[in-house]
Length: 472
Image (cartoon, rainbow, N blue to C red; front, top):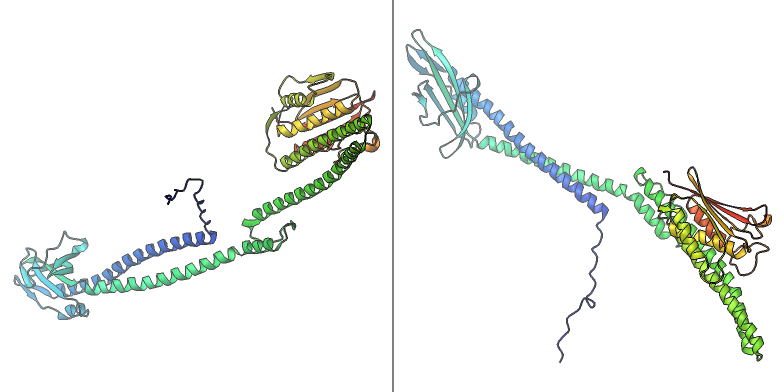
C-alpha cells in the first residue's frame, strides 16, 4: 500500500479570511472599556474619599477626648492633679470593637497617669496637636497628642495628653462608604452602558434602512437613494448615489452599444454568408473569383468595424474611470501619427506645424492617441489626394490641435449628427463604421475640451481639438 502523499501548496485548502469586525461591536467595546476605566477611577477616588472622611470624623472625636482630658489636668503646689473625665473615653468606646488607650505625661516624658508604653509621637504639628498611626498591642492604633502649658503660683510646666484608638470602626466606616460607592458606580455604569447601547443602535438605524432598501431592489434599479440620514452619512449616501448614476449611465451606454454593434455586424455577416454561398454554387472560376473578392472586401470591413468597436469600448471604459496624469500632447501627436500612417504602400504627404516646446495637459495618453488616430484615419480615407496638414498651437490656457484635409468636407445637414455612433454622412463613401468622430468627441469631452468641424473655403475639412492645458 502506497504511503499517503503530503499536500503540496497547490493541494492545500485555502485559508479562510477572518470575518470583518462589526462596527457596532467595536463602538460598544471601546465605549465599554472607557466606562470601565472611568468606573475604576471613580472607585479609587471613592476609596480615598472614604478613608479621608472616616479619618476626619474619628480624628475629631479623638481630639475632643484628648482636649477634655487636658482640661482635667491641674498643677497645684508643683504637683500634678488629674480628674480623668471618663465620659471623654466613653465617647470613643461607642465603637464596641475598638479599644482606647491614653497617657498623661509631663514635658520630660514622666508618666502622670495612663499607659506608660504608648509609642512616642513624631515632631510637633500645628498648635501642638500631633496625629499619627503606630503599631501597639498587636494592631495599628490612631493616636493624638495634645500639649498644654499649665501654671501654678510657684511653677509653670507643660503637660502632654496622648489618646489612641484602634482603627476598626473607622476602617469599617471607610469600607462601608466604598461599598456603597461601588454599588452606585456599578449601577451608574450599567445604566450608562445601556444608554450607550441604545444610542449606538439608534445611530445605526439609518444604515439598516439603507441596507434594506438596497436589498429589496432589483439589480436594474439604480435610482438614487431617498433615505433620511444624519449629516455624518450625507456624503456616503451622496457618493453611493453618484456611483449608481455612473453605473446606470454605463449600463445604458453598454446596452445601446451592444444593440448598435449587433445591428452593424448583421449586414456584413449576411453579405459574407451570401457571397460564400454564391462561391460554393459557382462553377465559373471568374464568378468564383469575384465572389471571393467580395468576401475579402466584406471581411476587411468587418475587421475595421470590430477594431473600432473595441476602440469605442476601451474609450467608454477609460473615460468613465479617468486616471489623468501629466501628458505631453506634442509627443502624443507624434505617437499617433506613427501608428496611424500606413507602413506599406504610398506614403501620404504630411505637413506638420508643431510648437517646439512640450504642451503639457492632464489627460490619458491612450485616449488622446486613439482620438488623434481616428481623425488622421478619417482624413487619409476621405481627404482626397491633397496633403494632410496638422498643426499644434498654444493659446493661453488652451492647446489647439487642427487636422485639415482636401476632401469633400461635410454637408451642413450632416454637421449635427456626425458625432453620433454609427452615424455617417449622406455622401460618405462605403467602408466606414461611423464610430470615429463619436470616439473623438467622447475623448475630448472626458478631458474637458471641445471639437469643432468646419469646411475650408477652397475645399476640405478642418477638425480642431481644443483642450485645457496645465499652467506653466
